[in-house]
Amino acid sequence: MEKKKEEDHQHHHLQEQQQSSKNTETKIEHQQEQEQEQKLQISQASSSSSHMANLVTSSDHHQLELAGNNMNLSSFFDTSSLPFSYSYFEDHSSNNPNSFLDLLRQDHNQFVSSSNSSSFSFDAFPLPNNNNNNPFFTDLPLPQAESSEVVNTAPTSPNSTSVSSSSNEAANDNNNSGKEVLEKNQEEENQREQKGTKPQLKAKKKNQKKTREARFAFLTKSDIDNLDDGYRWRKYGQKAVKNSPYPRSYYRCTTVGCGVKKRVERSSDDPSIVMTTYEGQHTHPFPMTPRGHIGMLTSPILDHGATTALSSSFSIPQPRYLQLTQQHQPYNMYNNNSLSMINRSSSDGTFVNPGSSSFPGFGYEMSQASTSTTSSIRDHGLLQDIIPSQIRSDTINTQTNEEDKK
DNA sequence: CGTGTTTGACCCGCGC
DNA sequence: GCGCGGGTCAAACACG
Image 1: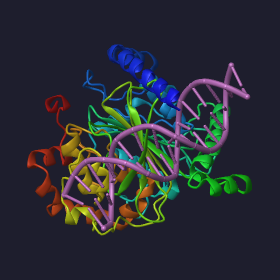
Image 2 (image 1 turned 60 degrees about the vertical axis):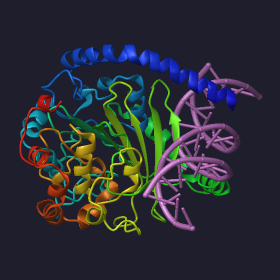
Image 3 (image 1 turned 180 degrees about the vertical axis):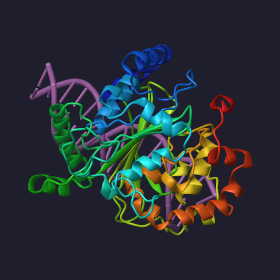
């Protein structure tokens, strides 16, 4: 054990060293790759014009991880496999804050509930059979899996980009490889999920193949690792990631009976990018814990905790955005879209709500906190109270130069 | 005291 | 079989 740890540490150090020199290189490489291979661009600091988000489907979160580990996000987001081109996003995303949402909406309900544009249901992830209309899935040979890994990127702002992925294979540029990966993941997932109690685990493994829970991963450009998505999370582990100087943190929803987990790790490639992978589906509306009264209402803001603290707070997604915005400052890329919750996207990048909105698990909140709710919230002050008017305006309405922000 | 984080230990699957 | 890497557990600790 100790040995192991030492190794890990050493590994870590080495990687860090490599990283420092590597980061610079990789950024350059990225740019090149982007141009040459049309790889997905994740907002790179150096390129102000890149706000495009590309949506990529990946076979499973492992790929994501690998990508991150390799420090080559661009490769991860290989656009070659993308169903659509950059332009797609550019047109919609950069100027139109809602574009991403719109896209999602088009996708019937898979991502967003039709009735409420703001809702995003987890159930949807598993993927649909009708991907045809979904821009994100289009043309992808998706085997339908129980869970899917979809990657979406939402260009939120010019410098920001977010990518999400669901565990289904989607991506697969290659059906075969994707499938293999998928299967592998399923097994792994099963193992993981069943680990709760050893005894239980074994039993489950042998007797039943647990269905893999839907996973949804996305990239967020943020200074904060743990994005507050409105739910309360308890950190239950942290591990060094191979080939990455940044550790991966494991969180679990603190709500009783809710087994949703999320993993958060920073891209070694671009430290400003945080990869968050949600797994499972919330079984509760929102964290109504003692503390929680729906966060926003009660605790407006700033939980700042910037650190982990954030995780513990819960609030309505929107507010969180706000929080995020402040915390993460310049931008988050992820715009998730939030889809409709906020109108915005920021152009500035400001904000984004990573988890809440886009994430499947948040369907509940989203749907319940309907758009109107959110908007009302926003309109009514939460935002205002919390966020500086300037920021707000940026986030909501306009697009500004990200550069300015930075 | 309740809640959440830290972190070493442990488990497990996979590849060699 | 062994080592590696990922994921989880749980005791200790921190904090309000």
